[in-house]
Image 1 (cartoon, rainbow, N blue to C red):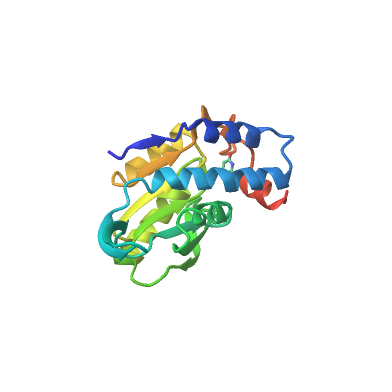
Image 2: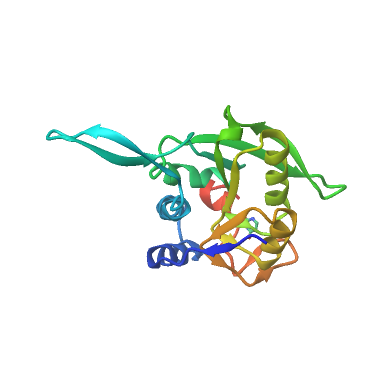
Length: 210
Ligand code: URA
C-alpha cells in the first residue's frame, strides 16, 4: 500500500489556514498557493537521485553532486492543478509539464479524458501528478491510469493541498504504488463531493470564477 505523506511544516500549515478562510481574496489565495507549492515541492523532491560530477572552482578541481537523470515531469490535472505549477517551478525550474483534462460524464458519472499532452521520453522521467483537492479520488485515479497506460513514466507521486479520507482510499486502492503528499487530511466529503472543512472550490478560488 502506498504511503500518505503529511507535510506538516509550520509554514505550510500557517499558509494553508490563511487560504481556507473565506475572506481570502483571489490575489492572496493565489499567492499563498504559490508559496505553499514551493515548500511542498521542496519536500517532494527530497529523494531525487544525485550523481557526482567533476567541476573546477576558481582554485582547484573537485567533485560535486548534481541531480541525476532526465528532468522531472509535473502533470497538472486541469484546471486547478495549474495553480501548483509556478510555485513548484521555483524549486525544479527545468521540469517538463504535462496536462490531463477530465470531465465527469453526466450519465455514467465516470471521468472522461478530453485533453492529454505529455513531454517526450516519459519512460525516463519521474512524474508528480498535481491537483489541489483529492476529494472523491475518481479524477486522480483516472488521471494516473491514463498516465500509466499512455506514457509509462518511471515513477509517479501524487501531490495535493487537501485530501479527504475517501479520496485517499480510492487512489490507494486503484494505485497502491503511488505515494500521496498532502498538507492536510480533512474530515469528510459532503453530499456534493466537497471536502469538509475544506477551502471551497479550488479552481474558482485560484482563477476568481464562480
Ligand atoms: N474540488 C474542489 O475544488 N473542492 C472540493 O472541496 C472538492 C473538490
